[in-house]
Amino acid sequence: MLVLGGTWFVGHAIVATALRAGWDVTVFNRGISPSEPSGVRLVRGDRTRTGDVAALVASGPWDAVVDTSGYVPANVLAIAGALAPVATRYVFMSTVSVYRNWPVKPLSEGSEVLQCPPDAGPDYGADTEDGPTRYGYQKSGCEAAVMATFGEERAILLRPGVIFGPREYVGRLPWWLRRVAAGGEVLAPGSPDRTIQPIDVRDVASFALLATDKNLAGAYNVCRPVGSATFGDLLHACAAVIGETPLFTWVPDDVLVQHGVRQWSELPLWRTFEGVWQVDSTKAQRAGLRWRPFHETAADTWQWLKSTRAALANERAAEIGLSPEKEARVLAAWHRSIEQHR
Image 1 (cartoon, rainbow, N blue to C red):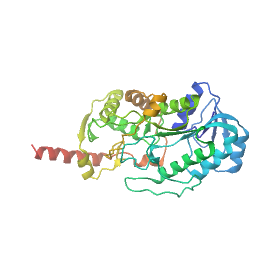
Image 2 (cartoon, one colour):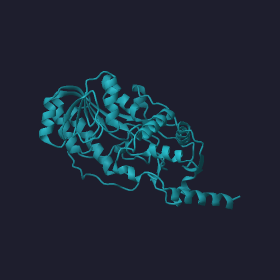
Image 3 (cartoon, helix red, strand yellow):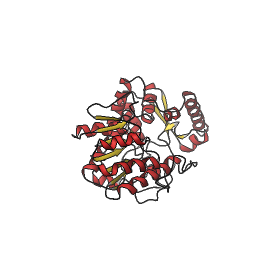
Image 4 (tube, helix red, strand yellow):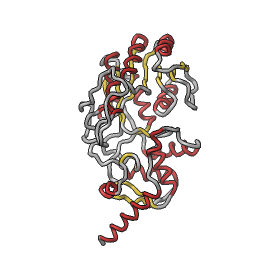
């Protein structure tokens, strides 16, 4: 197996899972990560440099390529084209953001995807408020590039929603764990009964390997089943693994919006659109997708956080989390509102 990337979050989990399964793994990256996998063959290089890619191709062949670092369609098209003669299958790590109606409407693999040419550059697409993003357009173009090169029988497109677990660099679950650990009254968003679908990174990796072993093809939504877990389940799992008994105060969506709380970032995983947690993963489930309980993910992530001085640095992590001051203001306003209506 060749893994493009392989040192950060999803890539690291795929390498670890493949090694445990007995795969001979080659990892292609620039070698700048502070954490390198052991037990693999390392090929240094930049996927944007023709000479580096040519050297990689010369070190093949492979039964499967897993691309965890493809973000620009033109580059994925070039990489896939170069690897096609020396690779049997190409597994591309995509996202539910490729769907035109995410997060507004419920989705399945049959839902319309954003249109982006397979040779598009990094500037294709645009961010729209509460709608399609450049990231979604770009990933859709990357999917098109893989399909154009490897064809419908040799390409696997994995479309996860939120992925969390140990080594999560965006910081959604780490923020909730740290907030619960801080104790006191915790502002919880909306309702504890709201269904959510985040999935452990190791379950995503396991499905990527399963899809390869089974010679699957096409697109698969990789997330927990709709209705299988709630926001309340997640926060109580965080409390259980930390050993805290915080007071969770569930503040209604409209109150949070009224006070300018940013969805998806200030209160991670909170978003009010109907479709955000209505992604049908039945196809993947039938193929063998499995998911572990929130308690296990929370426990392992907490252990990782305690064993490292800080979460892996990433610019997106700076956007995550509600400040203590703003949390206190919103909670105070909510309590005043309750008192006024008694």
